[in-house]
Amino acid sequence: MSRAASWLLILPTWIDIDVKTCGSAAVAGLASSLKPRYHFSALQGENYERLPYRNHVVLQENAQHVSRFIALASVGNPAKKKYIYAFSIVPLSRMEAAELVKQPLDVTENPYRKSGREAKKSLGAKAAEEEEPAQQFFFDLNKQQGKKRHSDGKAGHQTKQPRKPPQPTGPCWFCLASPEVEKHLVVSIGEHCYVALAKGGLTSDHVLILPIGHYQAVVDLSSEVVDECEKYKASLKKFYKSKGKRFVMFERNYRSQHLQLQVVPLPLSCCTTDDIKESFIVQAQEQNIELLEIPEHTDIKQIVQPGTPYFYVELDNGEKLFHRIKKNFPLQFGREVLASEAILNIPTRADWKACKLDPDEEGSQAKAFRRDFEPFDFLSQD
Image (cartoon, rainbow, N blue to C red; front, side, top):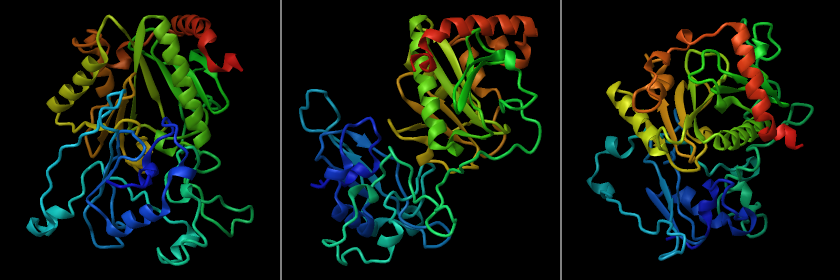
């Protein structure tokens, strides 16, 4: 067990721990150098397991085994958080090289990324004199990673997200400034995102959360757009709860040029969250789709790079399912699962084209939704 809180490198913002005072550069450096297959920690009394991470740079270094990080809670803790972890490990000497370096599908990049200044020093050189603040060694998800580009563009590293969204190569039905947008469906407009009724929705209150600018997927979004998406999700969750419903959100980053977060409400009496999760998993298996469960509180940006096709589901309890698309993914898969007999039992509405209304009916539905949603809209709270 690690006695230093190096595991804060992957803890999300929901846990109230100050990485500046709890993080350990020494243990971070040790983990980076030793490349353990498993790294356990129990200092902060929290249970958390991140996705496995690489110990080599792809195409630049020889492949190495992955590392897995597990933080365990205190034994007999009142919150009954997990404090036991059972696993089986084969000694390195008994493993074939190819099997040892095999990379799982959900592997992420190495979280121990050094800053430019640290990269020029050995791990032990002048550590006591010029130790970086702890957040330089750990992922602090409250902040963007990397150094900002200076105004002259000559120094520092670019942030991962561009300041301005890329422009569409052709007509886009979802860029708010585009003449193709059906503005009568819009129900709320923020600074970076907007909400609109889904055209041909599964239900009359099925909506989309969309970026105002042109972004293809969640993993392409800048931090301010992500923040506003989260505010809309929280507002919609409260709104649907007042109606006796829970929602399922899914995204298909495949054969689409503009991000669409599909938000579908389901009556509480219709099914449980576990029923929804099981339906997605079962139907995925039937179609030979590998749907993986993302560890709790892990951000999708940690497991997939921009430009990678994927399908993503988020349940109302925070559980997330993910599929890395390789080819021939069914375009209506998310709708098919929710429209199935196991959930909404409206299989004829699986294809949005079969559910289209005339513009007047769409406008009336949007007006009614806008009126009911307004008291819950975070924009109304400002």
